Length: 96
Image 1 (spheres, one colour):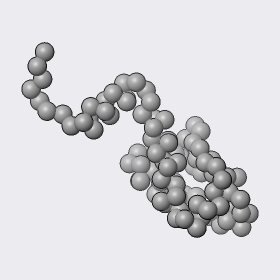
Image 2 (tube, one colour; image 1 turned 60 degrees about the vertical axis):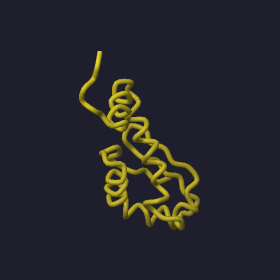
Image 3 (cartoon, rainbow, N blue to C red; image 1 turned 90 degrees about the vertical axis):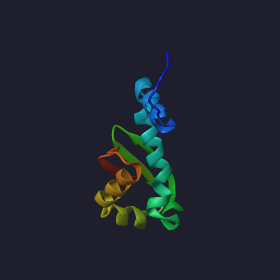
Image 4 (cartoon, one colour; image 1 turned 90 degrees about the horizontal axis):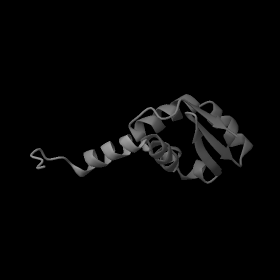
């Protein structure tokens, strides 16, 4: 069978990932990877662990003062992280 319409590699990969059901997991991993770029190196220095579970980003910090400060900026961080990924991956951030 010949295909006459050209497709980009990105489109082919996106279709394959969505058919296999792992595109959501990849988006969650991409969001965790983008955390240092969004918050900057100063805040990332105190980040010990981060993961996404059921649409919530869990971030573990080693500084109590920083935990308190980031509580006030959670909604802005959710917006910026989702915008960086290009999808609504998370709905909230839990700071531990």
